[in-house]
Every structure is written in structure tokens, then in C-alpha cells.
Length: 256
Image (tube, rainbow, N blue to C red; front, side):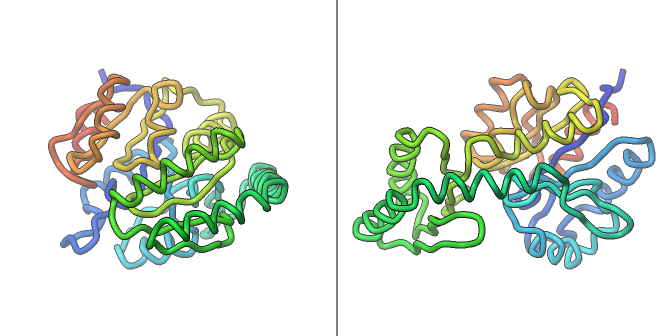
């Protein structure tokens, strides 16, 4: 019997989207999303990208299906309304306020941390609209070392966590993640983890790849070892195919 799934949350890069592929988002996967939406299933793209970057990539990929929601920078929620995406309130306002508050309260420590990291590592450190400390490392090994330093700092602060994707990392309030954003969408629609499917391939996907958030979990074959380990431990499915083909494989396995 098909699983009773009413909400699908997918990461974007490496999960449904593959750079330089013949079809960046497989046509069969797009058709599956369209069919599920027609049956009343909500589709969320849950990504670390900002909204403009995501919209541009969806256009370049000739994606003809519009997700019902997008979660951007791993925390901001936007709902599709009449052809455009509008901020979900009061979630986004609260998210912005809480980040501004914690970054302001710890501004001196964060400045000192940035200075210390710049002295230790030959990496690119900078500030952006979402985090006062971001880094792009020269290798994953270097990022491992940077992440260790950030985790030590965040353990002392308590409310901050490093959010990593490959050789990139930024800081975020612990209350806001791909997982908590997905749970807010569930709350808005009266849905449960038992009715939710989530798929991802990288470290920043881990907060939503838990059965407490989504009972039905999939990672494609290109998922990181840490992601595969968590999905396996949570009773999820490791697809044999990569990226979008792997997600389609998982949806098909569930009878969707």
C-alpha cells in the first residue's frame, strides 16, 4: 500500500538538481512532482541557497513545476502565491529578529573569532546578509578544522550552530534549520512527521533527515557518508541512483 505522504521536502543541489547533467532536474521527477501536487501533496524545496539564486537555477533547469514552499538559507520560508514567493509570517520576521539579537549580543566575540580564524587558516572569511561569519575553505580537510573551531565556540554560546555545506560554512541560530522550518510548514497545514518525506545529500540536510521530522527518508547514492549513516540509522532508504534519479527511485519505492 502506498505511504500516506502529504508533504515532500527535497534539498536542491545534489539532491534533485545536478549541474551539467543533460536534464539538471530529471523530467520524470518533475512529472512526479506535478502528479503529486495535483493529488494535494505539498512540495517544498529546502535549500541553503538564497531565494534569487534558487529562482535563477530553477529557470536555467527549465523546471516547469513550482514548489508550494521554498526554504532558503536553511531557515527562511517562502510560500508560492499567485506566481511568486512571499515571506511566511511571522516566521521570517521572528527568524530575522532572533538572528539579529544573537549576533548583536555576541558581536565582540564573533569579531575576535573571525580574527583568530583568519590568522590560523588560509581560507576566505567574510560577512553576508545572513551571518557575520562565513567561510569558504580551500579543501574539505581545511573546513573540517575550521568547523571544529566553530563548534567549540558555538558550544560556549549555546544558541549558535555552524551550518556547513561542503567547503562552505556559516553560523545560524539553533532554533532555525531545515528541520524546524519544515516542522513549521507541517504545523501550518496540520500535518505530521508520519505524513512527510524528506530527501537530502549533504551536512546541512541532517536536521530534516530525522524520523522525528519526516518518517520517510531518502538520500541518493551521491549522499555524503555522514548523511547515509544518519538516514540508515533512522530507517530510511539509500537510493542506488544519484541526484534526482535517486529521489525518484525513493518515491517510486513508496508507491507514489
